[in-house]
Image 1 (spheres, rainbow, N blue to C red):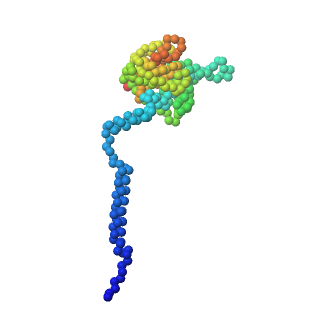
Image 2 (cartoon, rainbow, N blue to C red):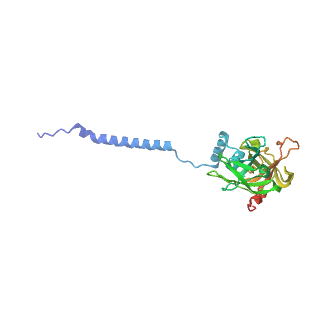
Image 3 (cartoon, rainbow, N blue to C red):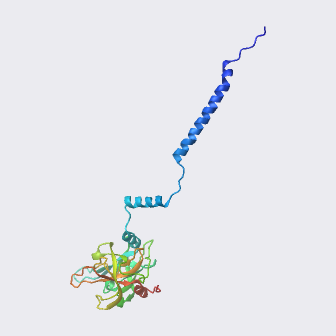
Length: 274
């Protein structure tokens, strides 16, 4: 009787184990794919309603800067403090005393600055301070008495001087928002905001010279604001703060300020009209 060798038990079970492992592997792979898709999600197309809801959520939960704040931020690097000095007879050491303080706005990378004539008039020495605290002596290069404007030039410049952007005042209408930046009472830089309250106004300034074609505005301005920029909501200079109206001797702001238009200032600087 022939004898047949007994086969190992493992050889008899292997085909079933292989099949089991193969099926289990497919199941695990399928679960991994499903888990990945669930994690990543299927991209959904955004509707206008979704966008509106997201914008509304942002407006309700985020503190956004005001239009005036953004305008002030744009013009701030171009604003300077202007001070005038002269001999002080009461000082035995012969040191100069401060005769006046005002503001100015940088018009070119060469350090050309626009300010008011009454800020620099009568001061043998001028000194400007830029926004990065660079200080420099300055000299007068042009004046326009009938608009109380002066052009000065700094002798020492910051490494990265940023000139202001100018814009025509022709598009202004009463009610337009404006911002004034300067150094009222030497404090600053200070920002105030308001609206254009009138156009083509006339005013007799400190030099008793009648000025015409002025922008009337109600953004707070005080002594020291003179020569500073009046800007629109894009941070563009539309005028130069020139005077305030106060029927008393207090020389403080009561709600009406005047600015020479940038077109008038342009003739003093030699800038072509808009």
